[in-house]
Picture (cartoon, rainbow, N blue to C red):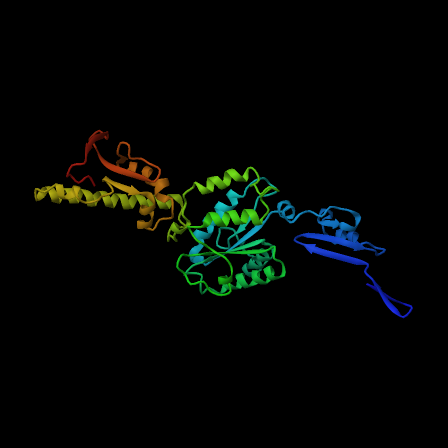
Length: 356
C-alpha cells in the first residue's frame, strides 16, 4: 500500500490484492513492477491454480474448484469402530466415483496402509486434516471419551470457523448423549440415516448440476447405495478381522466338524433310548435348520461376510450340502449326506452311526 499527502490530505493506494480460496490464488489487483504471478510460479505454484481476476480471467465457482481436485473426507472414529469406518469409506469411495477428476479420497487412520511404515502417525493425521474438505465423526460409546477423536474434531472445528466451506458431519449411535459443541450441529443416526449423509455430501461437494440434479453417472451409484440394504449398525468388530481366507476356512472347518460330531452323538443317544424325534426338535447346522449368514458370523465372531463367502464350500468338504431350493443370498439350509464304502455320496440322511 502506498500512502501520499496532497493538499493536506492523506491519499492511499493499493498495489496488490490477493484472495486464497481452497487451493486457488485469486489476484484481484497487481500494480507492482514485478507481478506476483511470476513469483508464485517460481515458488512452485501451478499456473492453473492462479486466477488473474484483474486481467479478466474467469473466477470458477466453488463447485468447480471442488470438482477440479480430488475432495478428501476424513472419518474420525475410535479404533473399536474401525469396521464401521471402513464400511463408510468403501461406500463413499464407490458411490462418489465418477471419473478421474471427481473421484474422492476417504481417510480412515485404521485402514490398512493408511499410515505408511516409518511415518510419524501424528504428522500424517494432521496433514490429512489440513487437506480434508469434510470431517465425518462417528460418535459411539467407544469414541465418546477418546481424546484423539476430540482432538481431530477440535482441529477441524477451527478450520471450519475460518472457512465455512469446510463441513463437519456428526453420525451418532442411536440413543447416545451428544456432547458439546457437536450437539450444535445437525447430525444423523448411524445405520438409519446414512443415505441422508450421502445426499448432503453430494450437495455440499458440488456434485450437482445447475438445476440441482445429480451429475451422471453418479446418480446410478446413489441408487445402488439406496438399494444395497447394508446396515452399517450391523457391522461389528471381529477378533478374526486380521485372519486370511485360509485361516478363516480352517476355523469354519473345525466348527463344522465339531457340529457334525455333536449331531451324530445326539442321534446315537436318542436311538439308544428309543426316542429319535428328540434330535429333530433341536436346531443343528446339519439337520436342515435355517442358517442366516449374518447371524452365523456374529455367533462365531467372524468378520462380516465370512459365512456368505466360505460356508458352502467348507460345508461341502464335510459332506454338508444345501437342501433343495434353500440356497439363497442371505440364508441356507444344510443337510448331512453319508459316504458309502466306495466314497460315493448317498442321498439318504445320516444314520445314527458315528462317522468320525
